Image (cartoon, rainbow, N blue to C red; front, top):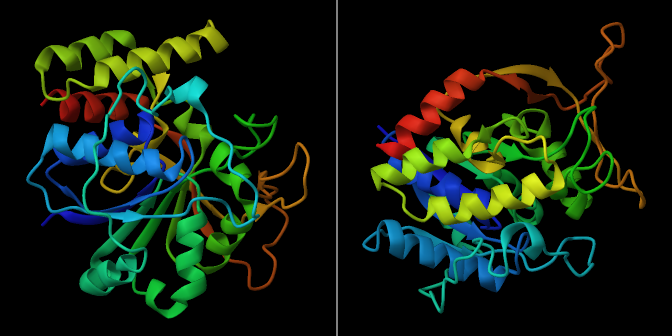
Length: 309
């Protein structure tokens, strides 16, 4: 039986690769997509989701839900066209790819439908997910597990020297999720930055014809990363490896309480764990599962096998 996934994302390049991976992976079934602000505005995210659906499976009955438009901080969100392209899909213009948009509260209906079977994967900002904990605290306890792409634990961030983009954008939302989510797995930059897909891997996938839109997107993505870091050998697929965690044992984890910095400045959104072995956990601390390392060879086989068919 396939694992039922409710996907929260700000669908840019790496989210799109993750969703294509899920579509081609028989063991996974995306039952709903919550389209949020993040890489691009929410309205563009919705267009990107429908463009992707029309490309891979126009007859699907996946529910597309309008998510948050701004963080719980109340600020205007910052978008990243320099990384993901004007429309969020590299050089691809999705056009006016619009379908039926479900009300935000449809999330509650999906959770009630699948109950303890549902897995939530959040690869973008955590605003919508945090809002669900505020509005439906009891209902959220029936979700089987949560997987979140975010954080940077004692490694450099990608927005500030210490902060990762999803956690930096809305640290209030992150704090809520960390406090209330049960069975939460965090996939941080510690591992996602090393989930590299090389141009040669992309060319091979493209030659098999299972996912033709991947090459223009990841070629664009690679040019950005190569310009920023000439020593890099490919594109990090942050969100695809997060979705992989649902169905693959390729990571090594530690179970630790997490703090998130709320103050403004370079430390905003910094994720902190105390890894000193002689320090006991604070009383009543919420313990989360954090990936600190992974087996690249297993990742390579899983990614290439699935995306190339």
